[in-house]
Structures are given as C-alpha cells and as structure tokens.
Image (cartoon, rainbow, N blue to C red; front, side):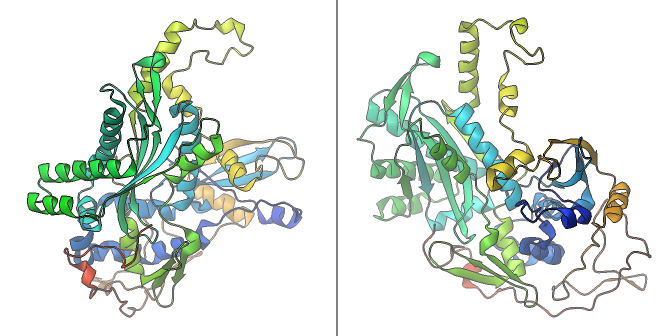
Length: 508
C-alpha cells in the first residue's frame, strides 16, 4: 500500500493544536467530513448492486474499475489507512501525512495535484518557444451516447480533432509536410456533470516545416478560420463513425446538410511564449476535475443531491444513486490516457530532438560539476520525473503555506518513516488521540433487505476487504432496520436511447 499510494495533506496531534499559535494559517484537510465522502460511503454498495438493473441500459455495462475507484476514494486522506511521519530534527515535532488514492478522474483533491504537475510539465518540457492556442472541439448531443457506451471511440474522437488541425494547416499553408504540435485532453463532463463529450487542446499557433531542431516555424494562417476548421472536424467524425458502423450513412448525410449540426469549435487567441502563467493555467484547465465540491450539496435525510452551475445559476437535483451514476460515467477506464500528445509534442518527436541536441553538444565531465551525484546528461524519463512536485510544494503553490517548516522552531522537517501496517497505525493514532471509529452507513440509504444464510441475518455493513474487524471492546456491529425506498427517477423520459442524456439547457 505504501508503494502504490502517495501522500497529501497533513494531520497534527491535538496536543500541538492546543499549543500552536492561532496565527498559523495551515489547517489539515479532513476528507471524511466532505459531502462527497459521506455520499459515496452511504450509497456505493447499493449503487453497485443495483447498477445492472437501473443504469446499465443508459450508461453501458458495469466496469469493475469503477468499483475499485469508489473503494480507493474512501481511503483517500484517512489516517486510519496509513500515513507518513514527518519530523523536525531540531525540536522533534511530528506531523502525520495520510496516503492519497490517486484516482484523478474521481477524487477532486488528487485531480488538483495532478493538474498542477501537468501544467509545470507541459510548459517546461512539452511546449516550445512559439505561440499556442486553446481549442475546444464539441460534438452534437445525439452522438454523445455512442462515445459513452464505447470508450475506445474517445481516442478516435481525439484523433479526428488532431487530423482537423493537421489537414487544415497543411492546406492553408500550402506545405504538405507541415506538422503542428498539440496536447489534447479527453473530457466527458459538462458544467452540471451532464454527458458532454468534447476535446480540450493546447495547439501550436502554426506548424513546423522540416525535422528536428532546425525546422522552420510558420504562423497560423488567416485563411484557416473557425468555420473551416469546424466543417473539417465534422466530416472527419462522421466518416469515422460510418466506417466503424456506429452511424448510418443516411444520418451522416443529414448531419452534413444541417446548417446547425451541433459541431462546434472554440478557437482561442494565441498565447505568446513569454506568457508562462497563461500557458500553465490552460494546461491545468484542460485536465481539471469534472466535479466541484463547492457546488455540491448532499442531504443525508432525504437522500438527495443538488449540484449547481457556477456560470448560469442553474442546478440539478437528483437522488444519491442517480448522482453516483452520473458521476461514475466520467471515470476513466483502466489504462485509458486522458492527455494525448501529437505532432511536435509527441514523445517520439521530443525524444528525437533530445538525442539530436545531445549529439551536437559535447557531454559534460562529471568532475566539472560540484556534486558528483548530479547526472549531467539526464534521459527523457529522468527529466519527466523532475517535474513531479512533492505534496509540500503543491500545498505551498495552492495555499501559500510552507508545511515543511516546523511551526515551533522554523527548522526544516523531513520524512522519517511510512506506516502502512493497520495494527501499528491504530496504536499510534490511539496514543495521539486521533483514531476515529469507522462511520456507520446512513439509515436513509436504500439497499435491498438483508439476506438470510443458514438462518442468520447478514449485516448490512461490514469491513472492506483487507481490513480486520474491530474488537468487541472498541465497537460492535449491529443490524440496521430496512430503510424506506428512495426515488430513482426511473420515469425520466431521457432514459430512452432516442433522447440525449443532457439537461434541457445549453452546455458549458
């Protein structure tokens, strides 16, 4: 567990909280107090058991990776699942840092950390010193269920977006060998978590003619307008769906004849090379989390979830099970990459330029450097790892607080150990007074009645796999009464395949 999980946030003992000065701005996050954590904890078992009956026809078959994501999310930021010990060598003050789940397509905290790392990596390693544009490719509502039910088509949709830019620039520039650079990100969520398949991209405002470092850059031509790029993208997507037998040719012909077919492209203004903050901001935006905790309201009494829109003032109200169904649609499948690199931004192109630079420049002698441990000629993988930020650096970037500075003596603290043994973890937390008992499920949840096995009633709540049940002296597991049935909005006419799965207002 210690190898597969990273750490985020931090917890300090109650003794230190009483001694600490009130001027200290840093406060550790408590993941178990968030409404999303309570919602998943109370309803994830019922949601998984009833998915095939209620939601399989609308969102496709159940993916086991979704269940694993929900389980890992419940372990994110909880001290009882393991932590790091960060100690000050001067005054021996300690801070406990819990593990994180790294489910970036579901956990907002882990997604924010990944977005910060991604922004630094794209700006420092991928993008070259030329202007870039933020481009968004959107498809009509009637085609979005096709991509949600068959996830492999999302990568094909990204390829169509790349081909539209590649062919458009080659035609407008009159250069058949011109190659632009693009970093594209798959997105399936709209402003209100509705199914809204689209592609975000950070694309070079022009193309290169030639190969390697000596290639010549040509700026974006005025002849390649938004309308021409949109028409090219529409034809590529429809041709791809017809070739894969996901769309009839007659339907594709009608979409080509419509004046407003639903295909749309947002073409942003060029961002100059010296605008580093803007390039990082766009890179973080295209990889942002689909969920915002600030707009989420969960009522445990009525089993209802309200999710609001930040821009238009609209909101959606649905049952907890329906909300989980809407949210888990946007969880990436196992092995699916959200960020894709094309052209001059691809791994192959960057590696070839790196080898070309190393061949032209003489390697440095290790004895000429002050530190003999420094690699004078780092590889591509080593440079990629150099952009991975520590949890303390991320907290300092977001909140402006240096958590590695000891609040008592202002010395630098270091990581001394990683604790993953649950028995040792419980002993340490009980000694510090930080051990929290596992929460019982919400009595208003709507599972099926308890089953009978050999005349014994099974408990509705049990420890997750790999956990040891608590002793009788600490906690007892009791049977819960069968709750009332919660509404599932099964009468919604949008459940039919002929209707889009979006709300009846404009998308973001």
